[in-house]
Image (cartoon, rainbow, N blue to C red; front, side, top):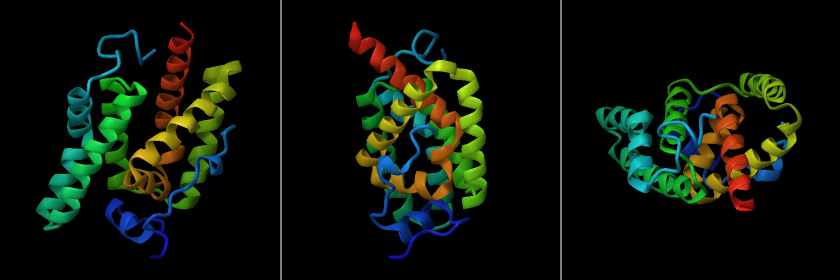
Length: 189
């Protein structure tokens, strides 16, 4: 199968990309909403699945069903369930899962071109470096690690991240970095 093309929908990217998923080491590692605020504790599987559905996955599946692509809608439901399990395993909160689902919906509706994704990634790095200061490199390394974990647990989600331009989204990187930082802090206790 050929690689997905800029502007492909989620479904087109998945169909064209096959098993091609960018490896974690291909993402530049230099490139308190979570835990402590209401809804910020690590979520249970059903809470995370519900957050993913209401955050955007259900809307995408509805569009697919309405368009007659029932196989894709079923695949999306399976991906949502797989992703929910992976998010629960690594300690995402319900709010973080919902926010990620909202980002997925935005990128599904309007995938970014390669050039736009690269510019967005550069801007995200600059912004996160300002926000995180001296913790930038550690947070980014944690974000890249979690990104790799999610991609390995749900390859179709990994393909979507790689081909939609979402993997360099500042909001996604912030959520991943903060989740990784929290995991590291709680592991030391």
